[in-house]
Amino acid sequence: MSKKLLVSDLSLEYKGKKGLSTLKNITFDLNVEEIGCILGPSGCGKTSLLRAIAGLEDISEGRIIVDGRCISTPTSRVPSNERSIGMVFQDYALFPNLNVEKNIAFSFNNKNQPDSQKKIKELLDLIGLSGQNKKFPHELSGGEQQRVALARAIANEPNILLLDEPFSSIDTEIKENLIRDIKNLLDHLSITTLMVTHDQYEAFSLADTIAVMNEGKFHQIGSPYDIYHEPLDRFVADFIGMGTFLPATVNSHGVETPLGTFPIFKKDIINLNKNQLEIFVRPDDVVHNDQSNLKAIVKEKHFRGADFLYHLMFKDQYELLCYAPSHHNHAIGESIGIEVHMKHAVLFEKELI
Image (tube, rainbow, N blue to C red; front, side, top):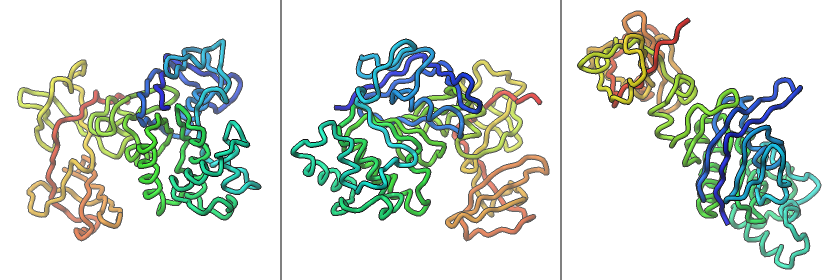
């Protein structure tokens, strides 16, 4: 049965291990059946946090609690095999000398349980690998191996499921379908799940809630929509998607920028120095329109199939990014029309150099 996960004021230190991250005062909770994601760059501490929850690392401060039961403190730790937590590792961790059904059966508490074959068949049906039970890992694709690793992790019906960079070794062309299938599977199982990844597409596709991490601490926790559209600091804004910063000032009409004046909400400027601001502009805020009087020069362009990502120079000094359908194929150095569609201003204090 799925359970709630609570991590309270957790810190973790790797003493004498150069290059390994330290976690600092991490607090978050994951509700029953919720899918959460820790999103951040490589080396920021994501996997260390996951390993601490799984019982594979000691913590130096704080607590880890599952359904009201404390499973980790600085002085005590419930063994990992008694936590009812399933984990899917980045490299799948399948046994190469065991076939699919034996890899899955390895996770059963009672290896000789009479209904194990029935259970394995149900799991293989669930992950879309019916009839593949006698194959060995080397006979499977990366996506198929990941499905087997997932089946093994959920075989004992754990209270919590942990996914460590589950798609990092998957070819791009099959990743999208695999993510969709696993999302549907997790929703079907109604299992509380925590994933870590550096890939925002994976986070947005799977998670109900995202915590953005850098250098061992959380910068923002929220829904994928809020993380993208309302970043709380410059790191989150810059890490999630792309964008550029332009100078901005606040007056009685709103936010005045080189692109025009935009509406503002009171919460956007609270505790900010109104005379030292920058506005964050994403490429989807800038719309290509050949008929617009607002012009910018194409400095770079990147073909992405359905669209181009244009790097623009506005008024000879301001950089902008803009998506445009790929049939609008403009040359480097060409002046193109743009419009700015911004629902509200995303503002930060100007970064002092």
